[in-house]
Each structure stands twice: as C-alpha cells, then as structure tokens.
Length: 193
Image (cartoon, rainbow, N blue to C red; front, side):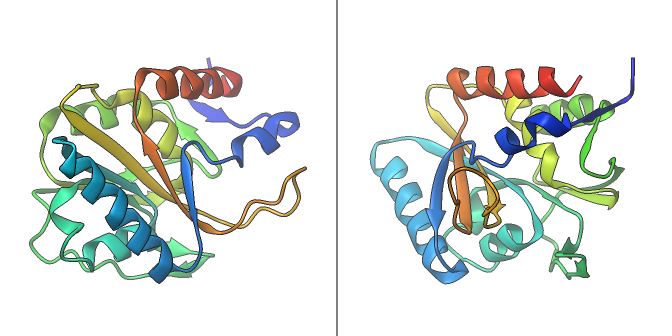
C-alpha cells in the first residue's frame, strides 16, 4: 500500500469545498466574525480548543489577544502562495515538531503524529519542512477527540475557487469537529487511498 494519500484527479472539485462554515471576506473582516463565533460558544458554557492549519490563519490568531489563548495546535509550512512567511513563535508553544509531508497530499504517518499531538494536550507548532500543510486538515479532523463540553474548532484559510460549478470566495473556514464531520472526512480520506 502506498505511504502517501493523493486526491484522485477526477474528484479534485470535491476537495475544494469548505468542510465547515466559511467566513468570507478580508483577513480583518473574517477574524472579527471568528471572534464572535467563539464568544457565542463561551456564552453557551463550552470550553474552546482551536486547531489551525495554514500560515495566514496562524498569523492572525497569534496576533489576536482574545483568540491566542485558545490555540492548541498550529500546522504551518512557512509559505503562502509560494512565498516565504515568518511565523512569530516566541515562547508560546510547548512543543515544536518538524515534519515532511508530500506535495498536494497526505503522508500516512501524519495520522499517528497528529493523534499523538492531540492526545499530548501540549500547545504545539507542527512545521511542515517539505511538502504542503493544507491537506493535513483531514487527518487532524479525524484524530481530534470528541467531548460534549469542548468545542474543538479547526480553522483553515479558504482560497477563492472559480473553476468549480459554484464560485467560492476567499476567507476562513471553521470546522466544528463532531461525529458527522468526521464521517464526511473519513469518506474523503478513503477516496485518496
């Protein structure tokens, strides 16, 4: 069995659809909407744990004094649109792990790695030093442990998509990790095997 999972070319359009709620707009506009959503969960009595996939979304959360304390994991490759991007990590993370992923896919070992990171409950930066980080949202969603008292929220940047049947604007996607979404993601992962 191949050690890397890849998107089947004839299914690529399915993978460009947002996995959760899309907050469309500029970085400034979307971060305000994300703050409102998290405040609502807190008002309802939930604890909130945030998992970030992508450099821009990570930068925006780290720069926001309200959102920053909720961060559990950031997955970055320190590139955006093929340009180098610097992530200010200071002493915020308890653990920094470097990982080699595959280009445009998922390395099988990422499932075990992400499961270990989630179980450790340490605030972690996962730096992808080869390949890309964006597809790691799938194994991450599968490996997050469900808990009725905690809202586990995965955020990632949504690039604009104009080549599908329906145009998708740029923004931030918030995935509220529940059993239903884990089943959807499991189907996507099986398509890639």
